[in-house]
Length: 220
Ligand code: DX5
Ligand code: ZN
Image (cartoon, rainbow, N blue to C red; front, side, top):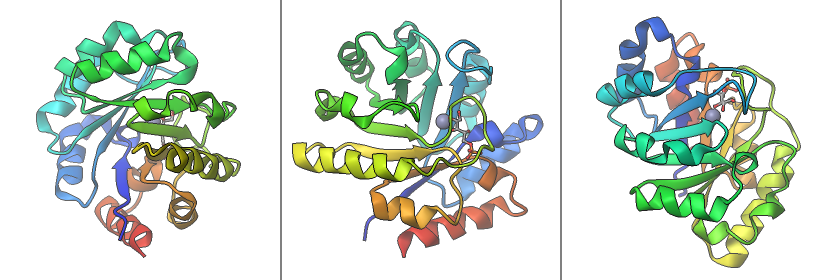
């Protein structure tokens, strides 16, 4: 059976009780910590930066899946590696020399991810797919948690899956934005390997149980 990964997005956590939130994820069935870094330029919001990531990394006992929503991400590849990022995802729309950026991420010992905005066709990755460990399909416009899932994403997942199978690449497909217990099954059926969930997990009455439920849904 395929093991679909669940990556709670820390953006939706209670920042005043961050250590408690991290320990909750540590003790849960979640697979990764999804960490959203926003610069207020690439997206119309500023989330948090290096000092907060450093604090998270100190307590986190699961891989750190860092999603950079920043312009010119090459400037900070080494910084994020030193802070303990396991996956580093850059936006296709923010990179002039994507191939070079991917090599630089891997040279620092991290898995290389590429995120696509909702308007960006998966076809732009055709010539670089074999170099990508993870494609993050944005199923909302990046910048904020708690937005509604964009249905067109299903078509993109199927197209991307076909590209991955055809080229023999081992790229994982991650879905980010508006994920919940209702769309989890169709997302996995379409080809998703990793589901990011922010508000659905952290704003739930019982986040630990919500993660158990999500894991169970995607396993059946
Ligand atoms: C959006 C972020 C997402 C966000 C997901 O720009 O990249 O990771 O935190 O949050 P929800 O699951 O609430 O849509
Ligand atoms: Zn994200």
